Length: 297
Image (cartoon, rainbow, N blue to C red):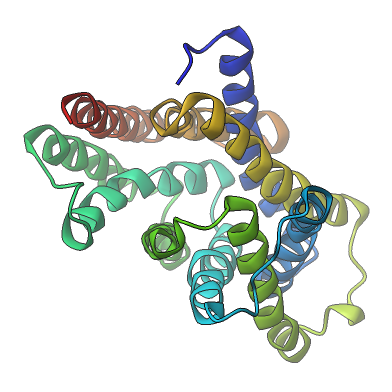
């Protein structure tokens, strides 16, 4: 891979900002839409730019090929379930807390990759990183100002949602020989198919009278934070590799806390800052160990 230039770091920062901005936009979307509808609209609008890119580049979409069950499973586990759980959880917790809780994804991935892959085993540095990172998450749950008996279950659901992201990522390895555009378009299509009847039955969104700001947030979540962000991520991966792209994990919780304060005036307590620092240190240790593993191979 080429040596990263200023433009590469700029694009990485933009990607982190987009993904971090998803959290406060989910919060705004919950003012008018239910969690199932948010998940459906986010996936539907996210599919549009990805499917359009496939048609533009002449890439065959294999959603209904012989591997359809893989696309369907990943769509359910990597998109439908976590998008719903996150939207449901954010109804009762601050968006900045969701950003920190979701930052546990690289830590969960380390544990699950050790169990289910052959080339990503745990070592001392990874164990230390996981312990430090999750200690920050546990410490965050002790913040009675922001997490209490009324919303602790919602916070826990966000944490569960982050784990489903990891499981979906592990399943995606089964399709690693296929083009990324095809895989992403296919799982978005299946996720949309899953959610059409569920959304119609549970929330009847056609009866809603949503605010303009909530509608803009939902469209943004789909087109920008899901569709466009994936395309930008793919460009960074192609040009700079996975190790460089993975650095986005450090920035997302930081930007998530800042954006939550700027746009929603959310509280930033001392425990939030301590938890944020612990999670970032944990991610750093895990990523450092992964980088060393790649160099030594």
